[in-house]
Structure formats: structure tokens, C-alpha cells
Length: 304
Ligand SMILES: NC(=O)c1ccc[n+]([C@@H]2O[C@H](COP(=O)([O-])OP(=O)(O)OC[C@H]3O[C@@H](n4cnc5c(N)ncnc54)[C@H](OP(=O)(O)O)[C@@H]3O)[C@@H](O)[C@H]2O)c1
Image 1 (tube, protein in one colour):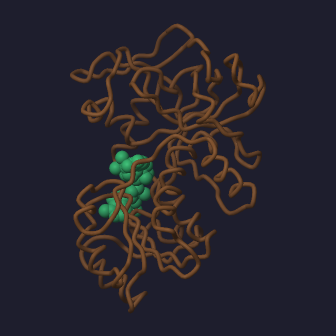
Image 2: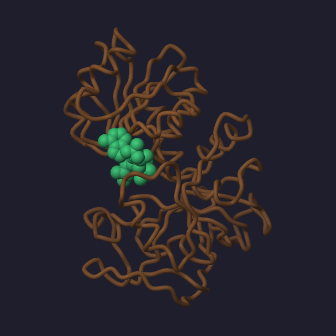
């Protein structure tokens, strides 16, 4: 099958070529990839950023998101059948068999049916970022009494967080640069510009402060603490330092049942996926460059 690979952390050049098709072992399904979302972790991992946590077996196929069609299943997997249209956050214990390929084997427990309302590119962009937003809001126990500040609300993760929080009835204030403010309004958030004076701008909108903050960019702790009401809750996916200030550091974990809850939200019309750009396997480097810019809106997606 065709796949993108890199051979080392030291000189991580992306190559497109033929590699063996994965076996579909017990507990797994073989997915023919139709679309695979790009996440910052893909190029951070390629630079060795996860080396303290995970072993790599080179050549590594990058990519942790997938939407596609089940083509095979392990002997103990009755819950999926060939032809099922599915999606998954397909992180493994080691870096090796990613999703920027024609096929990927994924643990069945990490797989959910693809919502009919999403096309392939949208479904490929949902799992990792959507479940990161979901996990953050679950940890914050966001409900209809909350005023939530979302740092990086136009980002892949932040855009999902705005929509999920709105579906739970919360009022949402979201940060983005000025050109993305109408976009935030469409998602259901009240926009504020990030940068100097952010805490004052948030207080203009919420004079009593906010009850919760979800940070999806990092470097926001001072503002977070300045705008939180006494007893307020906060999370970050990017700053572990929040733990020293009563906050929670969030790491997303593959979970098919949780992903199915996002699928339900999609089918209810409460959640959609904005695709910022689509790239072929030969263009993964360009997709990584776009992601590294830190200013894409919505999700970048690879289609093999
Ligand atoms: N811990 C975990 O489990 C986990 C999971 C997923 C992601 N992450 C991390 O979370 C971060 C975000 O991921 P992502 O996929 O959402 O990234 P992304 O989509 O690439 O983020 C791009 C967005 O960030 C916005 N942005 C940039 N600087 C900002 C700032 N200072 N304040 C507010 N918004 C800002 C940009 O808006 P403008 O264009 O308007 O500037 C743009 O819309 C990454 O560091 C990623 O590695 C962690």
C-alpha cells in the first residue's frame, strides 16, 4: 500500500512509497483510509517531541486520525463488519503505524461509526481534536450555568469546544484574531481578540468573571487566573503548569464510546467540522507547514 513515512527524528524527511499492508489482528479492524486529520502532535512527534513518552519503530507512518471503510476485522470483533463507515482516534502505544496511508489497523475499542451528516474529510478531522475538547469540558463539568472562556476558539480543538459547550447550554467567550470573529459568532461564541489587554476585554463582557476556562493554546495562565471567579475551574491542553494553580492538564485518550457521543452531537445538528484544507499523501509536508503556522481555522485533512 502507499504510505507516508519518515526514518528518523534527526533528519525527518517525509517519503511517499510502498509499505506492507497491516495485518488485522485480534481486537482490531482494518480500515481503508478515506481521510485523516492533521494535528500539531503529528509534526511534534516527527521532531521527537514524544520520545520521552513513546518508543518509535522506524520507518514511522505519521497520523493519528482516521475516517474510512472497514475492510477486515479480527476474529474477536463482531461489532464491526466489512463495509462499515467508521472513524477513530487511532493513536497506538508506539509510533509506527499511523493513518497517512491507504490502510491502517485500529483497535476496535477506539472506533465509532461515522456520522452520516459528515463527509469523509469532516469525519477524518473530528476524532482527536473533538475528543480533546470533549475531555476538557467533561473535566470542567460544563453545564448551562457556566460562563466559559475558550482560549484559541477558532482552532481545531477550540472550535469543537465552543460547539460542545454551547450544546450543554453554557455561555461561551472565545479568543481569536479579529478576522476570525465572525466565524466565532457563527459557532456560538462571543469573540474577543487575544494579546495584551485580553483580561480587560473578557471582563468587559463578563464583569463578574467567568466560571471556567479551557485553554487550547498555552501561555494563557495569567489571563486565566485574572478572569476566573473565586472557585472557578480551568484546564489546559498545552501548559502543565496549570496544575500548580488549581487547574487540570488534559491529555486526550482514544475511546470509541466517547467518540460515538460526538457522533450523536453531529447527528443532532449541534456539532460540525470545518475543513481548512485538504492535502494528498504527497502533500503531507505542506499540510505540516500549514499546521505549524498556528493560524489555520478548523481542520487540515489528508486524503490518500
Ligand atoms: N493535550 C492534548 O491531548 C492535546 C490534544 C490536541 C491538541 N493539543 C495541543 O493543543 C494545541 C492546539 O491544537 P489545535 O489542533 O487546536 O491547533 P490549531 O488548529 O493548529 O490552532 C490554530 C489556531 O490557533 C489560534 N491561535 C494561535 N495563537 C493564539 C493565541 N495566542 N490565542 C488564541 N488563539 C490563538 C489561531 O487563531 P488566529 O488565526 O485567529 O490567530 C488558529 O485558529 C497544540 O499545541 C496541540 O499540540 C493537545
